[in-house]
Image (cartoon, rainbow, N blue to C red; front, side):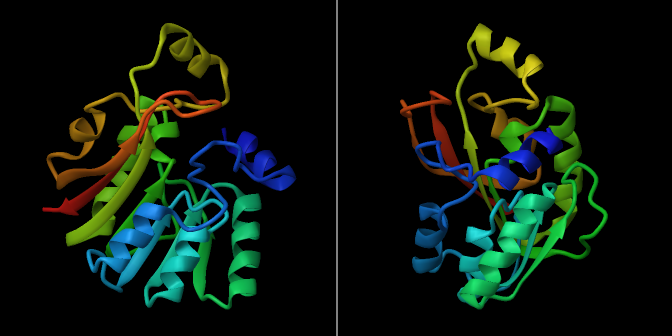
Length: 207
């Protein structure tokens, strides 16, 4: 999966999905939450930051930001974008299932389209790694593709260089309800193109 994404970022930009979570611009939900005052400047980390658009937005609005991605090509693009924007962001190459470069706690965690890519085993490892990053009261903005996979999609997830394509309805509660208050803030069904299905955005608050 790492090689797949590294080549993807090296030779293209993953903006072909209707609501691409990986590149293009800072995401709508993040902007609205900041503008409403729901998210206050503090220490923030963008998990699976891709080309860094969300991290750069946060840095431009008073946050101390770290961006993590396991694709070096993505991090290289993110650093270039940050330089062009005049934004100070610490971009690091790391694996969210076994972090080695990140320490301490954060006021804000952002994940656009990373958790849903992972296999069940890697989702469990991700949760173990991410929970210590969230200080009490921290906000966690989690965006994911979410639908009940069809038989062919389950088979394809075994063949493709991806752990999964989407989380199932109710799965966010399963993984996070013991440690976070969970609120779904938006979502959409019937995406055009592929993947077909639904996406959802959740705002979690560390208990």
